[in-house]
Length: 144
Image (cartoon, rainbow, N blue to C red; front, top):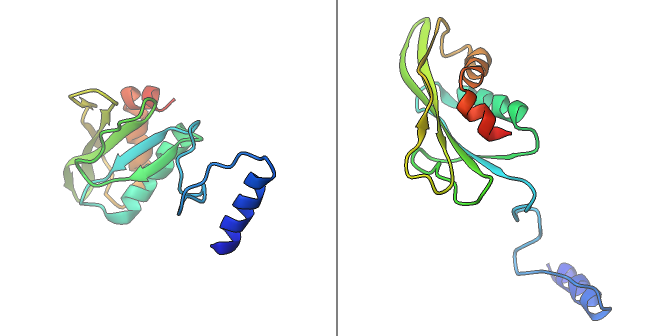
């Protein structure tokens, strides 16, 4: 840490402009040109299902930062950011009903997508995530 601050101070002393704050090494700072997708996942289906949805969103929205958030924390505050709630409304052994809800900055209400009924099990994570993205034009247009 001392070497980093010494380096920053020497650059500043040589006339360079350095914007630095304790603990801000740039890696955790938000890049102003990359918007964020705040993704919440259902309790059922586990990590694999959320991973599949994250991959499907990343494919549909290259260059966006995807952050997993708790249910209820999807609401974005910055312009250009979006929130996506992955909601499973019903599931049986070989059938799943699910939807994607879209949250936009400044919007009071979310935009709920259609319930999509699929003859898939929760274990068909990639197919389920891709089918939901494909069936949710309100989300795909917001991700662009």
